[in-house]
Image (cartoon, rainbow, N blue to C red):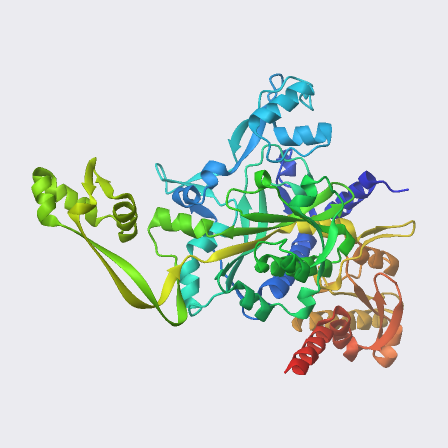
Length: 594
């Protein structure tokens, strides 16, 4: 019987042998938190990205566009976003061997309880009461303290400007929001997507591909008008998405110690008020469909709503999308956060840039405005020597602040001097306005590529007495088809078979289908090698091919074989992968609606 650890060891062995992944810098002993991807692993990752782009980005009726922003981020950007102050983990150090660890992880591993969101003092108390010691040498541990997870760097040689490697791709999208918005004809809702590498200086990564210091995030920031969200969601959310069933653990369920998730459709999440904006339900449904399309069973996917103390500093509501794994239990592979106006408002404050959007009214509205003008004559009389200084300071204060302080408070302080409302002309008048500026709200679906990569590999690994193989769904297989010449017999027949196989292989490549060629060893061994890296179909060219231009095509999972014409190979693969079916089904559905 294969245990969870046995299965993991088999996966790791296959991954290294077949060029999928392995620890980075191995010849120097390796560095925790860094992995490399071989020729096959790169292809599987790229297929997952392609599927994400197809389903989540470019398949969203024009809702989402893609950008590419820098990895190195000026310090001011991450100061404005709050990461410099909040992007920390609790670290504890062994007084005996000097190793450092995540305090919350040690607590969770020793006691089996969640330590996420606990204060440093509470974690120290738990560690002391339960005698939690160094897991390596048994030494005493220091009380937890915050450790910044940002990788520091500088822009420019010698004494450059301070900067960080980005810990997420999100801030690049927030900073570039207005440029993208303007280029997309000033329309909301608008999703901005990005696929990119990020760096997080994790304290003690010890979970293979699950916890890395450098990894790829595939995420989007979805900007919308909160006053129009219901009508806009109704426009874009079709019946299939509304009916998408998801396993949910709400914050209220957790507070009431209900641990088993309940099934809700996206429509129920909206109608029952479980999500704080209907766009959360929309993107959660999209993400659920995406993971299922990668071969993850629905009963192994759940959404866990985070409690207030567990949420990131920017989030009003967060659901973690988790997948059940045999090695690590429930693993977070994506997060859905309602970031409201947090990020744009902070960047407006720190940069003074106008990141607002104009909301045009259906018809003009009457609005009372308050106009305030300093009474320069009276101010000069009252503050003769300070007059120029006061007038200069007043000119730098916004109208909103003047109204708030002078009208509501009755005075304003300028450079330590109090100016009462009597020193200002205050005029109220009604005007017609055609719209107003507002800061868009944001929902963020963010996926960790390497974690998805791992859960897909683990879920697809099939082990039996007869063989071991990856049952990858066709669209994320590294190659769609393998081509094998059956090489034996006379030299002339041998060469003709190889020539035909090579022509088929190159023809598939030139037509855009990822193909793999192998002529080494027995046909059984070649099938086994192809199966181990998840190739769904294999074409074998043999003696019969020389007589009637047909080939044998074998399906990976069932191992069933059939004979088809060489000219039908392309169409056969296209049909089996599902491209033609997707096109016909979608077109029929849309034409019926029309």
